[in-house]
Amino acid sequence: MEGKRRHVVVVGGGIAGLAAAWHLRQRGEHLRVTVLDGASRVGGKLHATEVAGVTMDAGAEAMLARRPEGRELAELAGLGDELRLPGTIRAGILTRGALRPMPQGHVMGVPSDVLALARSGILSPGGLARVPLDHLLPATRISTDVSVAAYIRARMGGEVVDRLVEPLLGGVYAGRAEWLSLDATMPKIAIAARSERSLLAAAREIAADAPRDAGPVFTTLRRGMGSLPGAVAAASGAEIRTGVTVRELRRTEDGWLLVTGPVPAPEIVEADAVIIAVPAPAASRLLAREVPRAAAELGRIEYASMAIVTLAYPRAAFPRPPSGSGYLVPAVDGRPIKAATFSSVKWPHLTESDPGLVLLRCSIGRIGEEALLQRDDAELVALAMAEMAEVMGVRGLPRDSRVTRWGGSLPQYEVGHLDRVARIRASAADQPGLALCGAAYDGLGIPACVATARTAAARILDHLDPAREWQNSTDSLTKG
Image 1 (tube, one colour):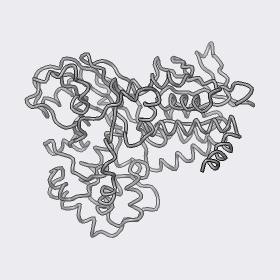
Image 2 (image 1 turned 45 degrees about the horizontal axis):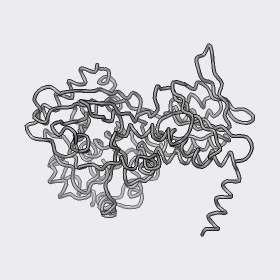
Image 3 (image 1 turned 120 degrees about the vertical axis):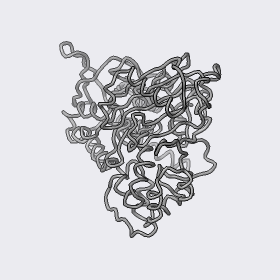
Image 4 (image 1 turned 30 degrees about the vertical axis):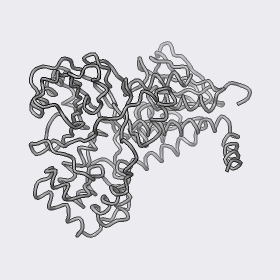
């Protein structure tokens, strides 16, 4: 890019915003890039602190390894040697009074093997008998998006929804199957729903098509996923400004003005282009003036809150060492803990320096459970300790504990979410030099957020240098 050095402002210093800054700087080396974030640190929900002397994630603890975007970003940020694989990903379901293994071959909780489902003991005899009736039922016709619960209940019955599918969705979205979009949260099942009569047969095909040699499903970093944001920020070469809240976004003839700082003493930041990488409610407020249609749609995306209680016990507190990566809990069982992760089993590197330590995390809170999350930290720790005493037979007090609250942190992909995102993007596309990215759109995981960041950065680069897209096409044809 010749001439004037163009300025791009990224609003939001979570992993999506930082990844967008990295892509902007790598592909537009003459750009000036500034990241603005209202918090005291970058990273958003990626954050790690010490528990019993061990650095542990307080937010997301892993990323999908089979999607390349997150792993590649870590490597490009200089953390390739820090990547670690899980010791196990074998998880269970705590339901009907016992800790039971997840049935083999399930697809996001949808069973593909009735015998494996029967061996798990997760369903009652009546619930189990209902599942194979899917083969005999007429097709469930779906022409538009429906809720996860509506479709799967019609095919396999309510127990599959309540005791298998919803716990997995609750672990990812802290949401309810009654409201979550089939198209957005279970796309492979949604495709099958439109082309196959039997869900059981479709799940069997999906499970059979899953690659057997694709390597581990998840990966993390030695110092936690919380170490990724700082590394990406440093590698980007962008100017990072924390403690700066953007209050208003205005269109100008040549670009954008961002109003920051306190109301009595506002600071104006000028930009040639802007990437909005904040949660949907904040994005809605920023776009209300210039892109009201996108703002209205963003304002309709609901968010769930949750808390994570991290406990560190001496190994002697367990009558038997925990095995497996942890367990999920169906909402129908009415327990305050929705999931437990045996972190030191799942990630053995955490206790390499102290093998006598057992580290675990308990997740609390689904959408609609705000009253539970209003309890103070001591009460939440007590709930987690009681859970471990009842389920794992743990005796005595933990060496250390930590409570991390994530208020309004998990976007709910409700029925119609994909159409809503398409409308948001169509409205934003009418504004030159504006792009959006983050967890509100195409997925909550780190790789999905990084993918939206890359797309947003490409849109901005194409706006700032219209010849670039043509040049890239020419280069690909020349090399082909």
